[in-house]
Image 1 (cartoon, rainbow, N blue to C red):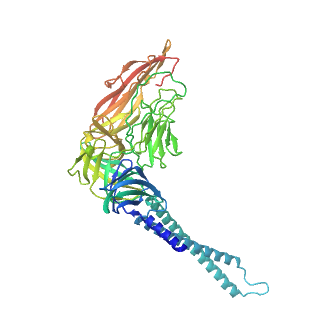
Image 2: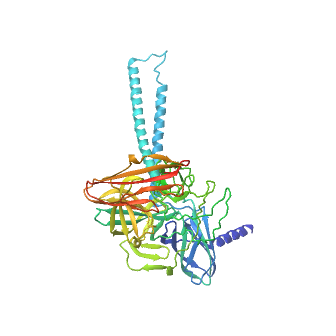
Image 3: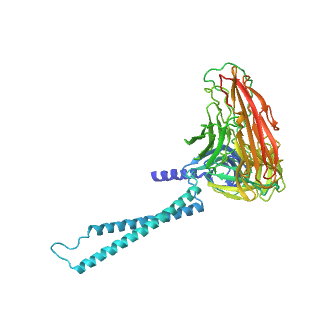
Length: 621
């Protein structure tokens, strides 16, 4: 009787447990944001009348539970939605990864066999070395026997050494193969595969029915960033721009044969409207903290960047030597040199933190191989800290009424382009399989020609190189994002530059690199190196000569800029200003020449000024 009772309880448990149905789902569509992605899955479920418990298993462990949406319910009601991690369920390796692991296992077995053979040969060699005595004192041995034994020892020792050498070479070759396979496995392996997510649904159905459910949710550890190829054959031809999206994902789940939509939106952006309150003046105290501010950057993290270089300057463009550059989340950091330049290897962080004594700090996402930073001087005492807080918010995407969809075909790659109030969506025609690993999938969004106004530019006080620039008009129509660009000029790779479309100007200026055929030199005039005293004041005269030589075979149009100092104190006076024939902006101190220089022609420009200030003080001239 007791046995029947136990069996009854066991089967009752099985029946109760079986009420929770595990349902397979298929990824139909992925909307990739600049940071994060929205997954759309479908599932076919058979419901009985009453309460049904359904488990959607083998999902990403990086799901934002608040973003889960279920549709296709008809008359069925949702009683509960729960997201959890199933630590007992493991993700299956992809076919490519499984193949690499199988190869690695086979090679490791071969290596082990070779090592065992080497060990056996070494033991045999040791045995021969320990038994080299021939005969004994009581039993003499013939000369012929000695020759025979000696030949055996020699031949066997030589054979052992040769075999050990051959096996050692094979082991070295296998070690190289093992390292190559491990590198490929590390690239393809998803480090979150040990955790699998699952969504549990409790549904109340009035009747037995079959439903096709649509499940949407947001995941982290995914996104895309723009990359541009900019090509020009000459300064007479338009710029050819290829707009690419580099998609990455390490969500723990492969996106197999899915429709891809690229969105310029970002669900992680702070969506809380700030409230601006009155600002009241009062005396401060030591340790006073300013209010929180939000730094606005359109730059998004680029996981392919391995090294970042740049220059840190103050508001006037002067380099800041000894400024700190730290990779956030790591102990990796450096200081700028005397010229304000830095170069730092990236060790897996997502942001760089810039700081300098007496200046406000800045934190910028690692988005480019070249990041120049301008730090603002702190107007408060050095004891006061400006705290930058990055608030997080969540959005659920734009509703259909907020989007204006262009129904016509956009181009050969993009099916439609939807322009919303706050973002743009590119629906890609071709389906993609994007595995969860360290690889980058490149999708070309657009390709177009833009008419450009080519000009040369130089500011020799900061950099005596001459830069070729292209000024683009009407660039807003292409929905460009801030990102890195590869420059190809006259058929050759000319380097990299950054595109920053956040400028409020009507045109977008792109730097196409340095032209070594135009030589610029800036030097101080000898007759303006004087210092004198009049009463309680010190007088300093400054004068500079700038020479530009055009070694190109054609005429060039170049903008030359320099600057006069600006006084921010009534005790510091600027006199005897001579800007030559340059355009002088009295507010900024910038002086500008627009020059046409013929081939092999040399042009010289000069400017000078005088500074008068109390001799008991020092200035940052």
